[in-house]
Length: 370
Image (tube, rainbow, N blue to C red; front, side, top):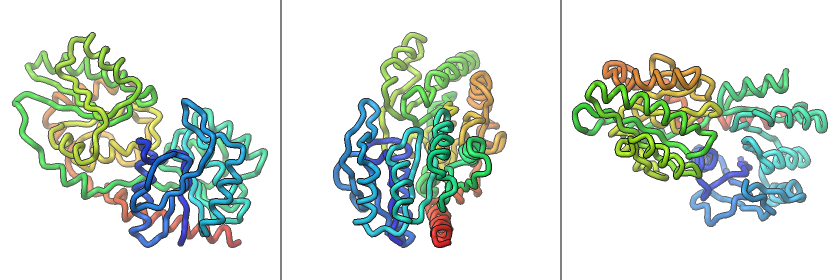
């Protein structure tokens, strides 16, 4: 099967969607599918993954393709590539993703659409587009990366058949980092890995840290927070931490590659993910595979792999998140119990995720053949 993964966002731009699609392409190729990435993200060689980078006008500062010929350009790329199927990935704003669906429809190509981001205002856009084009009645397979996103799609478009194609991780790679490393007595280390943007809500995480830090100090213990990731809020957050007088216990590490992240997790006790509009939560799943208990928000996509009170703690609001943080940081027995290995996570291992994708592709081909 020659298939194309169409995406607005791809490497060398760094982010969850970009890394997911690169890993998905590798897993599909390992499973025998001939997967090619088509994107408007500029860059160099794609390495072992074939990448077709389409030229397009781009809208700054959002770095989005805005060419009026985008659909025609995608259609031409699909024709010349001789593809059997199109898998379009749609985030919050995705000209390439939506354009790929339209181009594939014009060419009568089997199509899978994966929604990778929370809908928010785009729910109204989907309804308008359905009234204009009737796209929900086209022979395509609609999927979401998690059950919360699937529920949002069904609420926006009642009657729409939505499947789930989750993100994947290399479970074995992350599990290899579960052996803990020694640290000073009385020290508790919390970690996170995120882009420092408003969507990820790092300020809410820091406010929770300040509360837990004070509680730890009252017990004669030291709570440390290590933040892997970079972004536009970094300078402001560093100043915020300095103003609170805890800069010695908060480390901003910048962008960290996976091999360094595994070492970071071996030295850590718990993982934090404060974002509400989190469609899946790859970083939290990686940390969970590495044996860390996770604190996250109940509305996020992490509910598909995190069981409240068994493998982590889920919060309904910021106050609950802060209380969970303080409790988990200071309760050694609870951390040990929540950190236990979870055999259920193997369903997110790349071979299993690739198998689910291939099954969905076959379903899309049958729909298109009717």
